Image (cartoon, rainbow, N blue to C red; front, side):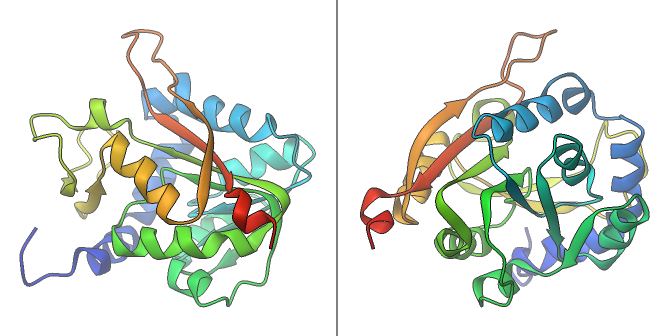
Length: 231
């Protein structure tokens, strides 16, 4: 990353440019790990809590909202990219345009039994602020379900330490016009971040790729810490 560029800003800028390519990639099943493992894994993780309502934060083109709605859940999707919200609405469903900053500022007056972030926690400060603000959007006893890249698999040739990385979209099956920054966290850093943000880990899942036998992702299922729930 260039020192004179704010990677948090670049994340959103890149997704504005990549919205159509991402929609095409998702809807045509070009990402093998999603097709074989991670799409089903996030649905199963959400359904395990038997929620009546769900809020998908960073919903993209809306596939998860539609999948959860088909399971009888009242689902709403939120994203900061207008083009993605437009694409999502094309196929039906309840989608709202809002950034994580809007959520942190309390501008999204919604509550749900489960909050979902599916490969949508990409920044550093923005994610820290979002996680700290989300408990107020949960119904009593609700859960937050986060799926992200498995740090051990996503580390590549880099040192296993927190830091900014660059997504070049190699192997995604479509022409992505803009590389995208994202913030890498180790497993220990994820656990510490949840604890610092007022969350208590209930379960961690590591869905395995059927071909490689290695984790295709990691899923964190957390609830508000007991002290916060008693307030």
